[in-house]
Length: 371
Image (cartoon, rainbow, N blue to C red; front, side, top):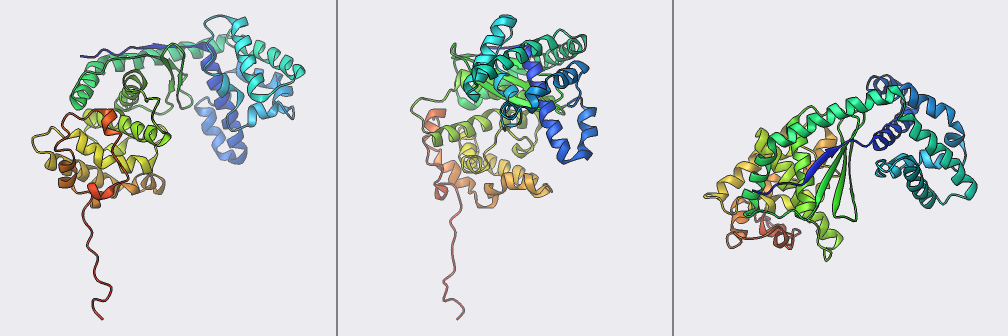
């Protein structure tokens, strides 16, 4: 069985940057919706620790400067930009790397760069505060809980994925999962030159371990085992990513809980692409089944039943393109009849825009009928 190459860690500056990002976003949102501020305070998104609040108050020249303010108020703020920079090499190297990144991205003048250097110097010092160290302790506890969840289910996850793929995938890279203080949702990956994927992960309200396992399954399989190919177009990458989401997030969650694929929302889920790939995915999944038509039909009914119970318009819009009633289980199974050994990279070469291959034939009445 394939063993994944994943480890779990806590980087103090990544934790602090995520806290700063959360604070900035929450303060901005609460100005528009003051009624939400008590909730932000409850979850320690605003005023997470006195040291953070003090830091913000003491650096209002950065937060209010006309140009530098853009570093904070832009859609992707400065703290999001420097979050992936490691602190393991010490303060001076961290300041150099973070300052360089900020200077390049925001095209800072020499004078503005000097202000940022002092800003980063004080930002680092926040991590020495006793209140922030308590946050780091809590983050390490959270990290250990996630690590334990994954280690308990790793073999099951990989066994399930290998069964679906029909072979043991070979790890081509590693995953370093940096756990964030769970006061604000973050799920972000960055590729490094050493064929390592850094995952920055924290879920504020996620108490369902099955979803955490499913999210991690995606990360250990995607880039380390089933990476994009350099020849893939943007469209093919999106379709391949949809395949990965069904293989890991959706299918692993279903196997752990018995619940619908629609009960778990993946990161940056593209509803149109997922809907197009869905019937073909079911054909792929059950291509070696003894009764693929029956299994495909059951899966469609499971997800259709869930969809009919959704009350949230926003969530319904995410899945309305699936058009469950139009999918023909027999056609789907027939499409894969001679494709028992199809690989994920062969799968992505399918023309997913071809709905006729997997949907029922529609018979339209003659417009002259009944005249």
